[in-house]
Image 1 (tube, helix red, strand yellow):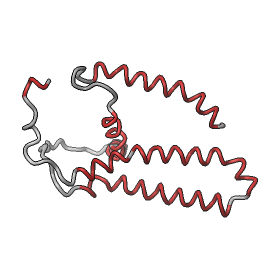
Image 2 (cartoon, one colour; image 1 turned 45 degrees about the horizontal axis):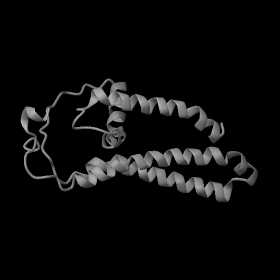
Image 3 (tube, helix red, strand yellow; image 1 turned 45 degrees about the vertical axis):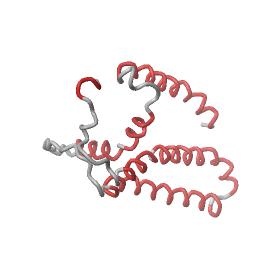
Image 4 (cartoon, one colour; image 1 turned 180 degrees about the vertical axis):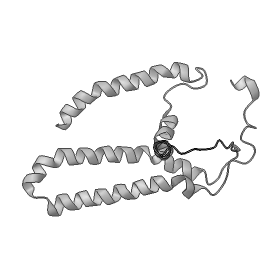
Length: 162
């Protein structure tokens, strides 16, 4: 499928999805306090892919996971604990990108290059888009090195904030 056809056929799906997301915000947030697009929440959803993947794998093997309540306190020194799946993904991305460029420049015959250019660079573009969306995870993990001091609930003013 040519990229123009993909964009023409995919545009209605993207527009309907974005419209549904924006329309649903009226019920998913506090109207006076949380207006606009919630890009931070979107980046958080994208950055949580390791959690969803692990949950999926554990569901396949029917693992029993006990409920363990955790304290909601900020903890220092968890950068690599938070970011290692994203770093592995970034390394795989760059290895793949270097291999694709090497294969396209050195190995692939010219007649194959013409036939596959659009598909190959389209896939590289989609992979790059996902890597860019994961940048929120890098920022959040880096920011977690210096958590704010104090109890996390101390800055919230009781029922009046709801």
